[in-house]
Length: 172
Image (cartoon, rainbow, N blue to C red; front, side, top):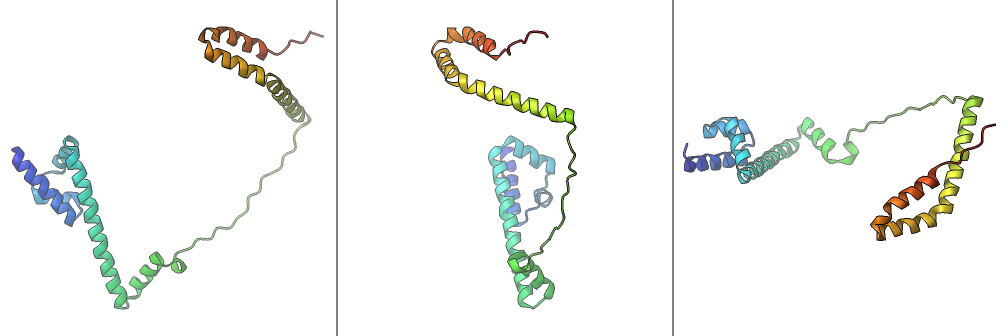
């Protein structure tokens, strides 16, 4: 197909989608396959945007038509239409779901061994936070010095490594 013919087909597809937002129907109307449409969309981003906008416009048109029909049915006092409208447009008639239940978690006692592990972890955490507080200002100065002098990085890492090492206790 030549370029002018393709442009005409693209315009036909876009116009059809504005009225009926169904890709297959638009392709049939233009006499092309869906694959051709998707290839054109991949090759031409502007056309892809036009197709998406036309399909959105078409869906809005169908929504308007459906809402118009629904309102007509409500005016004709059709109970299912009235019920549908109220459930979807009035908070008092919306479907509500109420969930009730309870959650119970079994309470297990810690073994004496587990209690000791927890106590030791808390003790170490307290020591760690106290050590961080003592060295906080010093570390901040060290970091500032490292930022100002990139050659200081290696010595700074050695200092931090030395500080971070726990003291070894003597064997008993």
